[in-house]
Image (tube, helix red, strand yellow):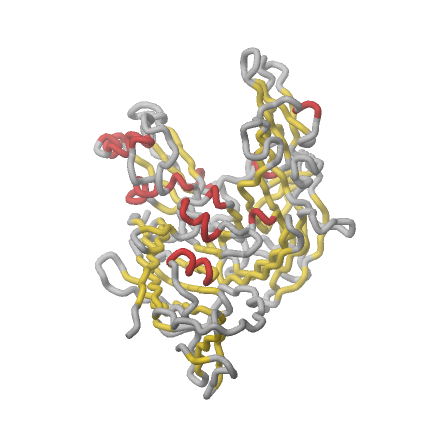
Length: 577
């Protein structure tokens, strides 16, 4: 008699109401804000302080706060400061790059036939450089790298692409910390940006000290509106990718950031290997996607009738005064106001975040916004603390989730009520203001991480996928695929809508047969994961095929899968499934 264990993965799309493309437009300027309203925007915040390497620190001694800028963590200017914040742009690899360095190894761009071709490194943007520190264990910071494709022009009509890989470290000198003086990494974002140049009186961004302000704050100068970055005599103006344009980016990166990843892309294939104890090489191949950016204009009457809205806009002027709040699309506060003091307005809201409160009023900006970006998170950045035990090993690539949803959570799906739940939110209509916006979702998780989470055995997983609307009816999803193969569980769903979709992945397995005491044979490492999977039936085991079948064989604690038209277990093994 077999016993079963069952779990479920649900993606819940929060309800949002609906509201002509102009490339490179500023979203907030494409729709006039009605007078006297409060505007809330979900849009990624880029540029400014994030697009060049810098280190800042502050001191509170002897009066007002004083800010400092440093050239490296070992800069005498910053000696004695309680902590430092490092924002480092990963430079391109060179012939002298070491295996322990962090750098951009290569970029590949698909031509008009969809074939990937190596792009050529043109130059590195000449912004402030930050020296590496062996003492603080932090890498060097450089500038955005500019690449040219052989024949893969974007919709701006040129073949120029910028690669900006941004890593953030903190250094705490408090002797009570775990590693005082050693940088700890908490975030990285890699983006490929199609762009064109605009000539003018531009110069690279730089730091200047305000001699008027007695506190000595350091200010950034030349943050030119509408420029992704600036160089001498020119501004990089963001363009758009061709529809479904394919790219591949290879990075040599800090191993603390490649355990779990999130992407703005689709049809993902990831190659991964550990290079040194501190660095991994990761290659991500995928297609760019269109990501809607959203807004909500709330009147005084609407806010007065909703206690949560009153708390959201409590520091945004009085009734009848216009103001704007902008939040990143992947911020964890979008889902729950965790960590905010309970005596503050937002801290008093339980079990909600910005997305829950704003979603019913969301509209889409009439601007196309194609993206190809990747984020890496440490477990301290996850929304769910229980993931640490099963996803904390960054020497392994643990998984990736990608979606085109307007609002998302970059963490692994939450483990709640014996289910994996991933929330998304967005408006019903796309940026053209006419068509229904169709969602994409790709998920790839190591099978051993799933087994760790559910305490499953090594017996094969059985998987069922379904997509339903809020009224319980099934959605017409054009593509849905799920399988467990080579140590990975992968799911792909397409064409769901954002009125309130629920994508449910149910996992179950039969109880494992008690192993016999036999010596274990040598095993091999699984091949790198591809989140692009062939179409599969709605319920599959480890693999399924019309012509072949796969059986599972056991010898001691070792499980082996054998495929063929009439597969048989090897000598010494016995069939379990």
